[in-house]
Length: 184
Image 1 (cartoon, rainbow, N blue to C red):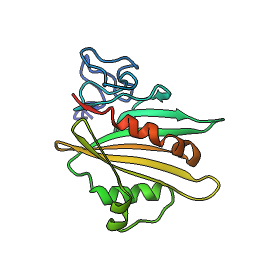
Image 2: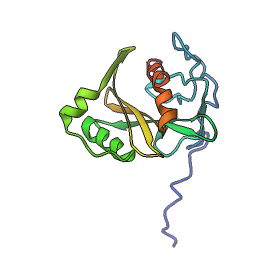
Image 3: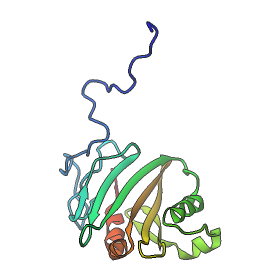
């Protein structure tokens, strides 16, 4: 008991809280706005990229792995979740991640050629995004629009999930959101 390790959950003095919404909706000092679209929000200053979330996406607390996190409100009580995650290296590979996402909306895996044929490619600000868009089936079908982007030795995952009608209606907004991503 005298050899018990110190609490590794304690942050150093002056360290910002982890899991809280970084930036509080304000644009960090010295960060120029994206050329078009809403003002940048929620991208913590220590990231290699920044973005501008649409005005109607509500920032929420960052989870353990999230670099950005938003709620998208639809009609009634419908909500969708937008997550932004960064992992080192290839993070398991493109096709494996797409098939994992397919499983999240109740779809079976696909072979690489079928996935590749359905990918939408977006090039913006020196970044290349591979975008997938698919929905499950049934009365409570979930829809997912996801983008994978590699920058340096990081792989970034941008994912919007929620009720089919809500997420389908956000497709163009999600694509425009990706086009706000800029290097720091």
